Image (cartoon, rainbow, N blue to C red; front, side, top):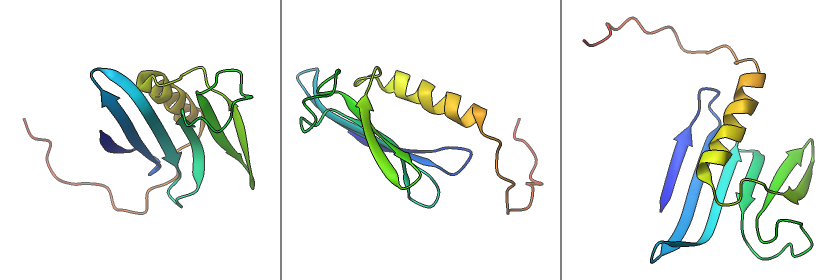
Length: 107
């Protein structure tokens, strides 16, 4: 499965899951800002065997450096969305450059 979510701050979450017979084999949840810079990516690629939650881990951008850390969320997309929601709530929204909508709300 592939999907994309665009959040209110214009950041995007790209979702990729490979499921076979009800078992998730691979996943990657890539969250980036509106400038297409990585914020966090959660995945289970087997290239970080020293991470405590191997194979689950996350890549976090801090300034110009990307850290690889354990991921408590694992493949749980709901946990990833909670983490993103907490982050979005702690940051003030950027002012919109588009004019406010004047269209009526459908009933």
